[in-house]
Image (cartoon, rainbow, N blue to C red; front, side, top):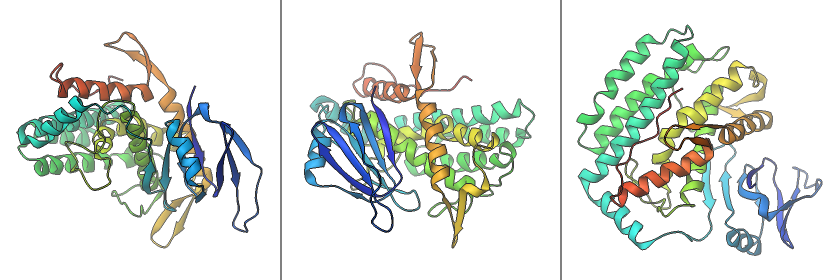
Amino acid sequence: MKKSYYLFNPGRMSRKDNTLSFTPVDENNVEGQTRYIPIETVDNIYCFGSLDANSALYNFLGKNHVSVHFFDYYENYTGSFMSKDYLLAGKMQIEQTRYYSSAKKRLGIARKFIEGASFNMLKNLTYYANRGKGLSENIDRLGNYQSLISNAYKIDELMGIEGNIRQTYYAGFDEIINDFEMGSRTRQPPNNEINALISFGNMLCYTACLSQIYHTQLNPTISFLHEPGYRRYSLALDLAEIFKPMLVDRVIFTVLNKRQLKASDFRKEMNACVMKDSARKTFVQAFEEKLKETFKHRKLSRNVSYKHLIKLECYKLQKHLLGMEEYKPFRMLW
């Protein structure tokens, strides 16, 4: 089974026959032990340190449909190397563009993304409220914002509602999480441990969605909720809205409340809170375990993983664009 590989240290990577060779290099340019990775086991590579590689390696990765995602020092996503669009279909591209070009059709899909995301956020709050957490005010306020979604007639109006929903949702994190305080949501850079985990987790969710989109006929640059941008895979941002509450936030609640991460796993630099390697490795492991976790799909009547669930969401969107079946976003029932 293919899996993701995470490179936290800088180093050199090259092709050796049908194997990837990675040699870590420390700050004194001293090489560590070389690791060999069979190409057939690689799905994605995540680089959190500098990677020394040549075009021959990227040609090899491209032919084997291996994606490489890059992050900067503060865990911000900076870009991806993706293989050629080998599954893009003309009919799908035309329909996807047509839906984006129609203000009414685009708004209809954008609403669905926000409906799914807000439902899943509300499910998280309800879960912890049922376990004695004081979240009734957050739940009521979020529900009030939800009722406004169907009345939004412009994308920027819808984005404003989404912003209020997410602000209300994040305001409940201090009640859910023990030993850490979030306060308000801060980005670029995050100013505390919870914000650092949210930013890091959201980027992992975004790249997970991007990877699954590439296994379908959808064009990742044509989106409906987020505005398409130059060199931006904005459809992955759309899909990630639905999955962040279950894939990112629930992992954050777990690793902090079970004390798998402590304050000592982070460090403060200027006005930023930075995750140490220990924090990144622990979170990545928990995130990957979540992606592999399976549940009984109520419509398919079989077990599916959360990773495969993202691809199923892409297929549902494809069917909607082709006029085969109305798109309904995934909603957590547990």
